[in-house]
Amino acid sequence: MIAELCKLWRGELAFARAFWGYLVLTGLAVNGASSAAGLLIYALTKSVGWMLFLHFLPTAYNAFACIGAVRSAKARIADASMRKGAIAASLLAFALLLLV
Image (cartoon, rainbow, N blue to C red; front, side):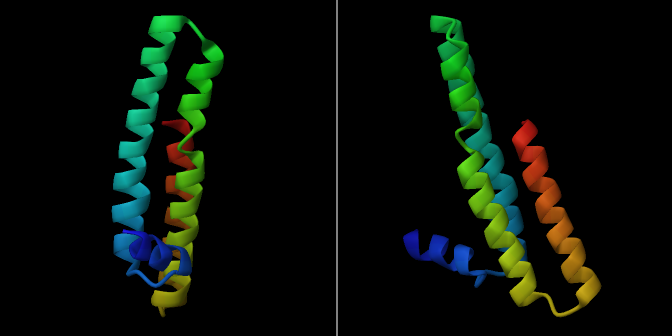
């Protein structure tokens, strides 16, 4: 697992795996679990601070996955227009994950 995350960070994974596997699917799962925990904490304690902390906690992982996907696109996609589109899609997915 750690070796796979190191490969993601260095951009050594295929773009599809970095984007769909780590950025989109795992990002949504981490965001969902964190948001559910935040809502549960708010329901039990009415603490807005803890709820917001838990809501934004996955931002570090999402940024890590986005950087890995962008590096993967730069290293693995030869066509310049496809590479730019892949980088734009990665940044858009990161922005959307900030809102979820």
